Amino acid sequence: MESWKRTMWILWFGVLFCSSSYTMSVPFLPLFLFDLGVPDSSVNLWAGIVHSSAFLVGAVMAPLWGLLADKYGKRRMVIRAGLSLAVIYALIAFVQTPWQLVGVRMLHGFVGGFVPASMSIVASVAPKEKLGWSLGMMQAGTMTGGILGPLFGGLLAEAFGLRRSFVAAAIIILAATVAVIIWVREGKAEAKVPEGTSASKKRTEPVTYRMAFRNRALMSMLLLLVLFQLSVNMIQPLLTLHIAKLQGGLQGAVLSAGFVLSLIGIAGILASPVWGRLGERKGYYRILVICLLSAGLVISMQFFVQDLWLFAIVQFVFGLFMAGIGPIVNTLVVQSTDEQFRGRSFGLTTSANQFGAMLGPLIGGLLGLAVSIHWIFVATGMMMAAGGVSVWLKRRRELGQALMRRG
Image (cartoon, rainbow, N blue to C red):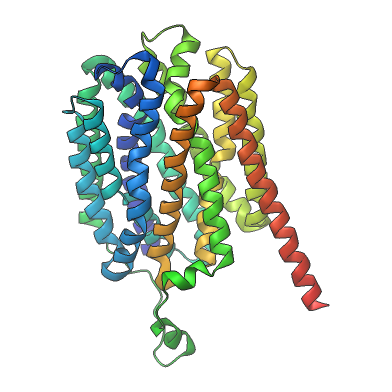
């Protein structure tokens, strides 16, 4: 097996375990709030605060971790994040008040970075013609963890309680980190550039954040990520409670939510590599527009859904289209940035994801006090469709300008 593929598959299992540990614990935090004494009347607002607290800190810290990854090595950042996250998940099992949970979630955001650092390593070692497929596979690994996490988390919570499921999440992310320590060696597959060439001289020129912020292609992708994560995460703090209402009560809601949430992961496994290959053949911008418009239309259909089985089907179809957005945006970011800026570029994408994921639960939690979740589904769909239209218009304008210059 080629060395870059070996590295990719090891990190694939790493992000699978990382995602599993996350989805074993975080989606069930709204139900955990009941154990901490939060009344039903304010649980939606508290769920938004708990979700957003980690993303607020993570949005600030991600560029710094990206800078340190470029300076000291991406592998070290993966190991740092993994060991820290294992401690954080274990701490969640011991919190006694909602504010303690918010504090631990802020620590969660502070130490994050396992998945983006892993993505950065894969983007650095994969051949250019395999970039879309390899990042699609990494996204599929994340989605695979998204299946296993809610299922195992739901089963563990039903059998042993939510607190013990948090400890299990800590053990899983620790196992992923140990695998990286033992088997991943950074940079072996990267091609060397002969000294004295123009490419070698270009590498000596430092690439700064100020230069990156002048990169219009990069900035447009970062803004799109903010919009995408904001729209998706508007639903997240309310989703588990909505599933409980669809099934008629809180009894067994954790297990039902785990099953429904895992469907998005199944869709991601099936679709992410396919979208990556289609992007390589048909053009990344075209596939990105299709995914955004289709995902927006499908999630808006939840407005009409009143049965749990139909809700699950719509979520699965939504996951099929949503799975293409992340890897394609990551591929476009890699193509629009210099290799020596790779760690920082994934730090910026993480920051954009975290910023959108911070605003989304807050907006969703506040909207949940005023309107039903059905209208929040509609708002989510409209925002994603608007993102697709904006990408399409921008791409048409760029192609038109290119044709005028040639003429």
